[in-house]
Amino acid sequence: MEEDAVWGECEKCGVIPLLHKLAKGKIFEGEAEVKELKRNTLQ
Image 1: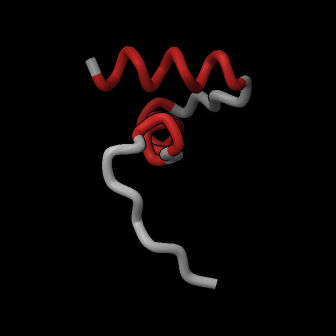
Image 2: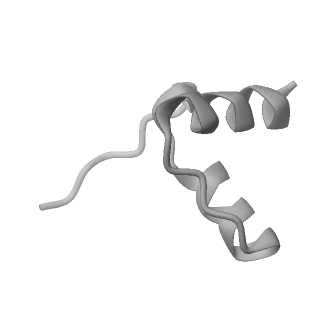
């Protein structure tokens, strides 16, 4: 199943937590943690 990329919907994207995990070794699992990470990264 292939899904089209949805640009501009950063709150639904999983790339930021994945890249942070790969770079820093820390996993963000909680919804609030992920939202905070995205908010801080995208500002």
